[in-house]
Length: 171
Image (cartoon, rainbow, N blue to C red; front, side, top):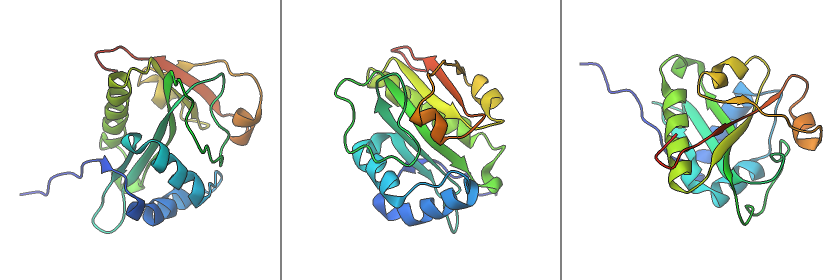
């Protein structure tokens, strides 16, 4: 009998060193400090997940409630969430090569969007890295005009702001 596929669980502070190692391996062009990961986990633990693997995480998802015309710039410690967030910002979703093509990204996005809708958030946003907009479009996200500024510039040329609406009953 084959072992059951791994399932996403809440991220904990003990997971952060391994998650940081995965982030460095998968996103070398988008470095973020350990403080950023700790900040997001402290502010929005219900929207931070890890996909455990036999020896190291196979993936992680970092998201948080947000408001305003633009998401935070890359490698920015928030310190606090907006008092009246209106959307869930998907800050980073990463899968190790061994977990790609297994439906795990789709599963965690669906879970995060459902939790956001249950929390009364009206939408979700993200900055798609170059070449990833088609994937996000398949999950209901569409390009979302964002004025030039530090958030967009921090992700480099080709990053595309995207957003989608959520319904109260779920994604």
